[in-house]
Length: 72
Image 1 (cartoon, rainbow, N blue to C red):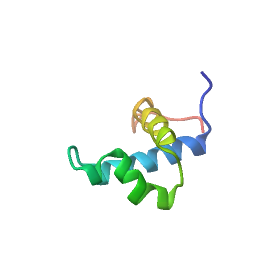
Image 2 (spheres, rainbow, N blue to C red):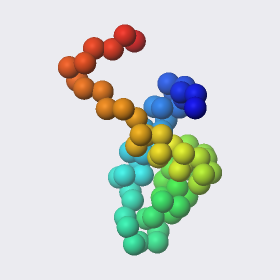
Image 3 (cartoon, rainbow, N blue to C red):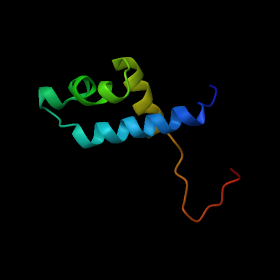
Image 4 (cartoon, rainbow, N blue to C red):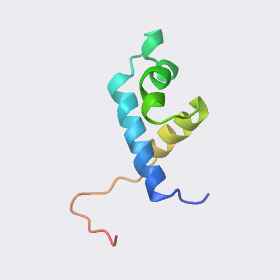
């Protein structure tokens, strides 16, 4: 699997942050699809499948320690 572009990773992190702020288990209007329709699509137009891919990408990113230096 190829590594995603840096901007795609940033977008995935922003979308996941929006989802985490507005997600509520059990509330139909605040489940993933409801948050996509009401909040995320107004900022980043995308399909439900793309949202799922972004969430998976953001959750599986390796943790970078604050002490760890990066080349770029």
